[in-house]
Image (cartoon, rainbow, N blue to C red; front, top):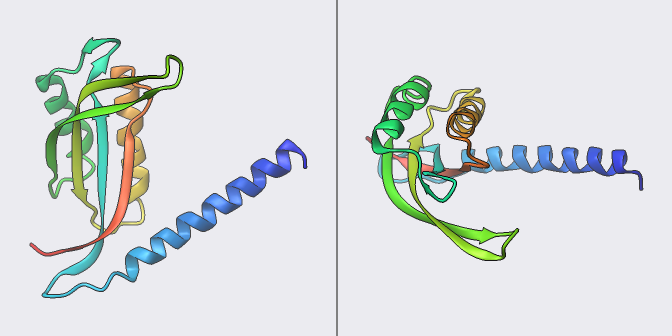
Length: 141
């Protein structure tokens, strides 16, 4: 199988799985006045190199400028400790992190706006990645 064909098949499979995941969010059975929606969690590492490079103030300004401007209805920020296996050294890397949780409004561009936030953080703070999890949920306010 050619590399091109394999890449095309991988893309098609990813699209099918993404669409199936979106359909699952609509099938959540909510009770007690809650409504089905999706919740996003974005996980931001704060180290630049081997030390904290994203201060509380830096992160607060990022939230105000990049996240609240795209999701003005609100969010929750958690202080966390992230860790993962560094593939190059095979060692466990640890860093202080932030998790931002957003109840998505259900707009067609929700995922695009989340991707813009991820790319803005990576660019601004020289990060390799930002973890993004989107899952179905039942919410009430």
